[in-house]
Each structure stands twice: as structure tokens, then as C-alpha cells.
Image 1 (cartoon, rainbow, N blue to C red):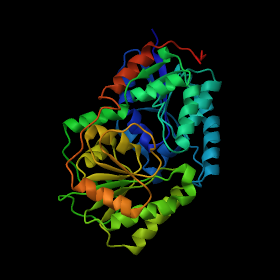
Image 2: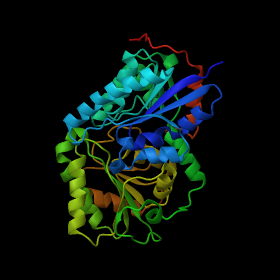
Image 3: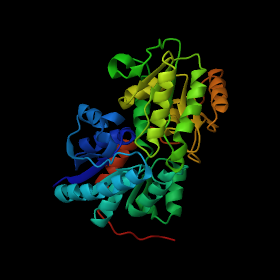
Image 4: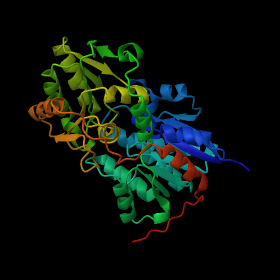
Length: 385
């Protein structure tokens, strides 16, 4: 019997960690064949070149799609999506998958969903049904309506997808595959590598033995014109900290140029600041770094998901993660350096928060692979309203 061909499209640095354990489970499944396509910013060095980690982990890449239009503004995002539809449709026509899998909610994923839908290829969507405060929500719910199968990460997300009219036999709460990696790190959480030696980066090289904080802040696409002002408030708060800071570069979103310009300007004016900047890390190393930190600061979904499972304190800034399911580890603040600083100090004075399994318990990858092997290959939908 021929194996069912599962095409997974990875389009960005965070998407790989969101799906890595599912990729491995598909690869190892006796009745599935993994067709891995890497596209968009996942191929670009300036955003951490996730493709290098994918290849290092032993995954064979079926096709690479270079479709990112430079500009880091709304027009570039729209055109990047259009180019993605053109290029991915050619790839799909060549490799002829039985099911296509798209991940989460970044704008690049829309191209995968549109191409699959118009080519009558069954589409499975990981992490649908969640709510946030920016363009990602429109993308996420649009993909839900295009997708045939839904592998959601929480119970409330499942209920939301059902309310959107999807059939109950197409919606499964698998948990988030990124929690699978977090569970492995939680069981062996020692910081067993030197981040400076292993990942390079730029900036100061402070001693981490007495504690440190991690910062990861992305621009908000619906507020992209204010991205520099937003990051400057965070930089003001961080400047007053007595702890070393490990800072990760933003995603390729509209407004990223403003975020990057604010960071570069700060570096020039504060050459002695105890901040080190990284582009990217392997998922396991990044989570170990987070687990051993005093706090995560910014607006990344890793603070909402993996840090909830790991019990890592988070200062969540602004609107990017509005209304998303939360554990016990979040302090929400506005784009105000005094609020940010006060929230950081509050966490530094408290014990670690309780852990939460709101996004799953660590077996999502296996569940997703098993479902992909069993679900009927259908691309027509009956919507219940």
C-alpha cells in the first residue's frame, strides 16, 4: 500500500518550533510520507535562517520557495502573500500531496491555504480558533474557513472553531506541538550550553550566573507606524535593569524596520548596556534559556504558550496577544516604560508562577500524525450554522 503524502509548509522561524514534533511523528509514521516545503522568512538569514536548523535536525526538504518581498510594510506583506500563492501552487502541482498542512496565523500562511483550497487538496490547519489583537486573527479565522481539518491547541479554540460553523468531526483538540518540546525541556532544564559561543550574536557578553532576563518583541501589524515608539518604551525600561538582557530580533512583519531602527539607535547611544542580541536559536536551547531566566519581556506567543507550561514569568506588552488563553504566568502592560519596569520588578520579587497545561500536555505531534493517517481525503465542506 502506498503511503499517504503529507505536505507541511513552514514559512517562518516560529512556525518550525510550532510543528517540529509533528514533522518527526509524520516522518516516523509507517503509513505517511513527509513532504516538507520551506518558504518565506524561514529561508532568510537576517531572520535567523530557520532552514539551517531544519536541515540540521535531519529533515529532507522537498522544495524551497523564496517569496519574501523586502520592505517590511503592509504592501510588501500583501505582495509576499501573492508571490507565495504563485510559487506554492507550482510546488503542489509538482509533488502532488494528499494533504497539505499549514501552521498558525502569520500572513505567509495564507498563501498555503489559498493555493491548497483552489487546487482541491485537503487542507489541515494547526492552531486555529485562537484570538489575538492584530492582523493574525483575520488570517487565522480565514484559514479556518479554507481548511478541511482543524488541529487546535486549546479547548476554547475548539469551541470557537465550532462556532464558526465547522463540523465536529473535523475539529480536534490535539494541543500545541511546541508544548511537546517544552515537556522535554521541563524534564531536563539545565542550561547545558554557552549561548554566546554557540549562537554568536552581537553586544555585551554579561555573566549570566546571577540571573538574566529575555526580551522578544515584534511589531504589531495594525499598529506598525508606532513600532519604533513601542520598542523605545521597552528599551527605556530595560536600560534601568541591573540584570543582563538577552534580546532576540523581531519577525519579518510590517513595522519590523521601525523596531530594528529603534534597537540599533539604542545600541549606538548605549554601547555599555549589558544587552546581547541574537537572531535565532534551536527550539530546545531557546526554551532552556527561557526556563532558566528570571522573566520574559515582550509580546511573543512563546510567553503565552510554552512559558505557561514551563512556569516562566512573562511581562506581556501591548495588544499582540489580546484575549489569548492564558496560564498563571502573565502580567499584561501597556506600551509604557514605567509599567513595564514595575511589572518586571514585581516578577523579580515573586516566586515562579504555577504551570499550566492550557495548550496541551506534550503529545500533540503524535496525535496530529495519527489523525493525518486516518482522516478521509476530502476537500468539500458542509458548514453547520
